[in-house]
Image (cartoon, rainbow, N blue to C red):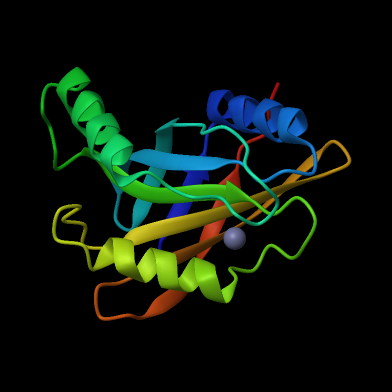
Length: 155
Ligand SMILES: [Zn+2]
């Protein structure tokens, strides 16, 4: 099982993006650092503007550019810093991935231009002030596995 850690600075960015979006979905791309066996830390995330409810649309071109920038900023150490996956909010419903979420993630992890061995989907929601989330990992063979999401306390 993969373990995904969200450190305090990233958590703060997420919480303010979710608060700003209110009832609208928002989301973006996760860039991660491989810190241990099956353990990744989210080091950066992009935040895309809000769209209509439940109609978050990702932009693959933007993703590839963000990944390149991120890797270049870390000396091209692709094996350590890389595309980790996607995140978006479910402000009004369950933290479980929808059927469409499954389809989207499978198309990403099977996309050769992304070239991922796996892709993580994090879904977040603000419950009052409390950040809640879920993590799932998608593999190129179509499998999806629940993963462990560790939200470090924001200070
Ligand atoms: Zn969703």
